[in-house]
Image (cartoon, rainbow, N blue to C red):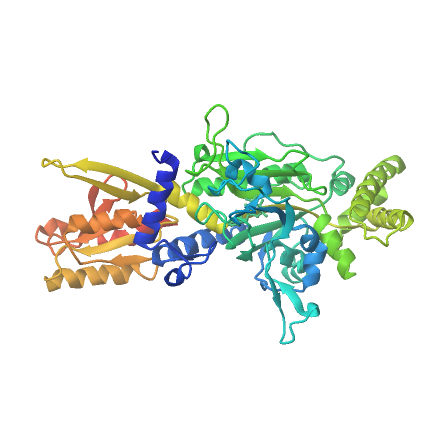
Length: 542
Ligand code: ATP
């Protein structure tokens, strides 16, 4: 049977990744470890560029976001408060015959069309009932390795942000609305790692928790909550934005980010989670999808895409949970609210008080510990709503949460382009060009002396490399014909090649100290002065 086209495409991508040093199987010499991947020389550069661009866009280019770098292992209480110990699990099923292990919620991908309830692992054996399997990797802290020493490798970076919320608030001099950003490793013992790096067991996340005022607080201060158009970027943030406007803003900001690194809107898709899909505390969640070669199609034949990033409006759930579990206050004090509240008419105060009370009661009821009584819950909700008059509230949060590895895979799939050419003798050759956006490209420029046995040319080329190197990743290559060297750089995704030749040395005096600049995507060449090279390359690669 012929291989489906999309699988062939993935095979080509996986093979290029290994051949050119983007991604290797972890522990390959020992047969590999399922769900773990290493990034080779080109992959490591690509990944670093992506993380730095994210960090730059999310923190340094904004006044309202501060950074954090927390530990991977944290107090296990964090994962009790977040709900991960109790509920971070996938339903797992086993095949009784072949012992294959699958996720019950992904049976459409694994079930045999003839015998849907049977294992597809060729044997068509009977399957067990689904059982919950917690995805957190467990370890022990300290030498005794007793139950009291159990700790977890973090399954997401977000929780550290909530746990350190107060410290960041106090040291960064930020005020709500503001965000805390973090990039780092996360670990999930996925039942079925698959689709190359898409679902790995060790991966990296880039997460922002953007803390906002509850809508009741906005209404108290500004009279009403602003609405923004449902499509398009809503523009600069406004003080009277509520959670919907902020959520919409972050979806659009994130799409802009993807467009800025070469993923056009056409390559992306969106999934707006339905009420049934949403966590009980979440108000909305929009997943940004990328159309991978393995992504499924809808009934009309359009590729749907798979999740790159989720942008969730998580209400005040996370900070509230940590407040309850740690006993430490997670709320903020807002002078503007206190002053505005005092001036509100009594009916407005009552209306806002009641809405805030209902929200808090709803949260407290749904998250109640077994020993909490309805009276205690009502009392706590009353205290919380009374806090408004004193200028106190627990911030709500919008969470854009992206996976680095999925984005790398999307960038690689998006960049992959091949041309097959047949020569006069009928011999055909397929040439691959990785059309990375220059901002993410692992190598920004290759410096190529036309000949390696002409010392003046080599010296000049080395001087050009020395000029560019402090600013960007430069690759110096003097081996092989110039055509082969260009082809090697095309495959690595290097957007620009610079060739130093006899004209650079002044063979044609008017071309003294100029180089040939070659563009990867169309092979066009032009002469550029060495003195203009750095500015040109910086303008294209940043
Ligand atoms: P999925 O439904 O695909 O398992 P998720 O909804 O559980 O993903 P989140 O918990 O929202 O994912 O994590 C945020 C981001 O982290 C995801 O959008 C994805 O980019 C990344 N991510 C999550 N799990 C993995 C994984 N196993 N391998 C690689 N990246 C992951």
